[in-house]
Length: 301
Image 1 (spheres, rainbow, N blue to C red):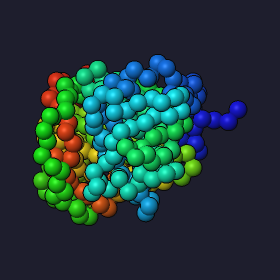
Image 2: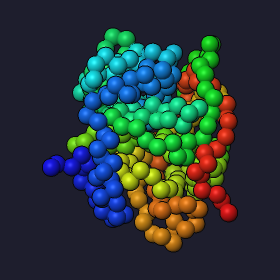
Image 3: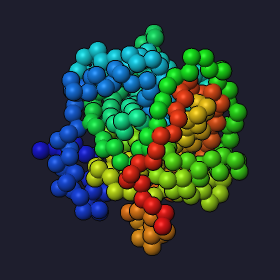
Image 4: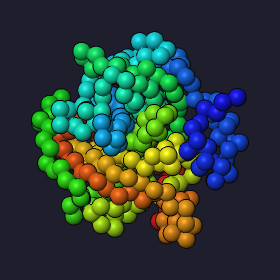
């Protein structure tokens, strides 16, 4: 029987020693949008997107709308009545036939769902032909109460560069949540979530950041993609004011146990070399108030 996982995912699963466990979990990856997911999808006001542009660079972004802006048309088709802003670097990646990873995440309930597939552009937005649909566990999701602002100032790109400013570096060091876009050359795009206590991400300089990989679902979708294609996109949200910090670069997995030991709870590390930085004020109408940290976050002690 052909594996649902691609060679990169299988390689990481084998190295970590979880091939059998991952094989069992693979049965929860549906080739269609199962009816058990429909209500959740259509009730959500936001979705994280991951895709690669025409240069092969990966980007992550966020779309928001009133619940119902995402609608399940049939078991293979999700219609989204929204598009990224004109200057959003991910917007260029959305075109007929392009691969897209979607992450739907409800911060209040810590529930999340991933949907990967191919894009068809439509007059009011786009649709996604689903190829993989599956739920993830609630670990490392910080609880937030989110709502859409009735009136939001227009989006404004305040920085587009090849390196992080000092204030951007500090913002990342203080982050408790970010999102990752990755791409496999044959299996498509993926969008995923990472979380921890503020300080869990290290930023040694303006072009480098390192984050710890904690115990997860054993599928290794993101790390498997990195094994096959180092291009990666990162998204840091200003949950209070709706700003976005988008990074694109290349990643590598650090398997050195001694280096990982410096990060509490880390089983391995990911190091990113940043190639492009885009910062946008008022990028979304989303406003989220912090409610509490995930009980699964490793303690820094």
